[in-house]
Image 1 (cartoon, helix red, strand yellow):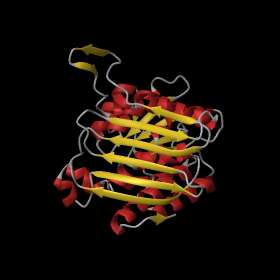
Image 2 (image 1 turned 45 degrees about the vertical axis):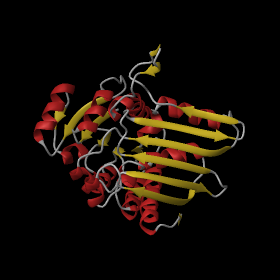
Image 3 (image 1 turned 180 degrees about the vertical axis):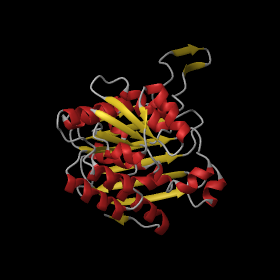
Length: 327
């Protein structure tokens, strides 16, 4: 598969490194609004530097990775779909549900493969939990618990443009909830506060939040988010079912445990999302390439991106009104 990357920032660099490890994919060209970023990534990978439009319309490129700011996704999705390119789009697809519906229409009309980059589905441990749920190991799922806490909050400048905690951070957890529950969510109830940094509250966002999700059959998911975790990047899930429980714990810097007269101690968690989800990013891009080469449909698709955004919007509305939101 011949690929072009639009956006050579942090996540574009991650995907480029993953592509270099795949024998059945070739990174042909990269583009970025900052020429220096494109030039640097091209030098590292051997790719060409081209304009965005040139990559989208190129006859020697099969698919594009949209690693650009969310505000650019809408136009780039339309252009890439009309050019017949397979599309790998970082989350969120767009901040507007209506605009995502427009994107779904053009992707469907042009019949192009589309993967929404909700990478946590590809985490080896989380994927293992889901496969064992599907195999019936713990019976019927009853309650899912998802804990996601960042080591430190992002800059206030980012907070102001991110769409808020529910759309920027918890959107991954909304998708994970659907992934593990196996049913669509019908009710969302959210609470949130600004406890980590008062400036986040002044910017109109929260930094500490909890959401309860319910399905039509009564299954429950509880999500806890914080922009601060003094002990590192906290990423845990637990699924309780009628026959037992599955749990995926944090990944630590190493697995060595020491016991002394002061008690037991272990290494801290990995401290950054790029380290924590390195394997997931590789598995994600591998799936996209493999699906294209085998003429199969990649997943999660654009409709999964829509559902995650709808849940984020519902959580924001619930926080604002203090009432559950029914989908």
